[in-house]
Length: 200
Image (cartoon, rainbow, N blue to C red; front, side):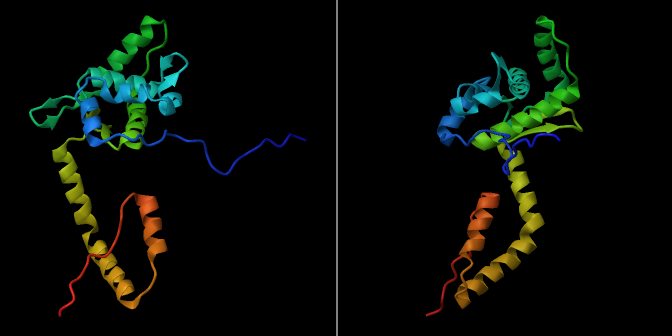
């Protein structure tokens, strides 16, 4: 009869904790060539995700190479698309210098996806590895504006209905605070009815 190995309900963490960093401090990191990767590499709570032994983890290595190829630079006001092939070339040159086997562009893409989850969890910024274009980019203000507008347009009708229900609950004195706190926990958004003016 096989032994009963221990299990737990909660899976192991896939990303580290959110870092307490102000937008002004983050801006200083973003003007440095390897700002994001250095931030994760130098933070003790992110060490298990950033390092593998005395070498960078595969996701951080891909992020570092993408930064070296211009991930955090701008062309005018727009972010630069970095070719996955260029990132793979950098990583593979490093690996082969140590006698290790090169890795595929798809592996680099997957590593960049993991790195994008790391930076989103750590500091809330978005990096988009794009399989169709085989590029990676830092999401700039223009793309952020377009994304917010597109997502809002997709949800506007439902949000209007939600607002009507919140006003109804407020008018009737129904306690829905437990639902609103659950939404905040799940989405990181605060939902509340807009204040309506009562005619005098």
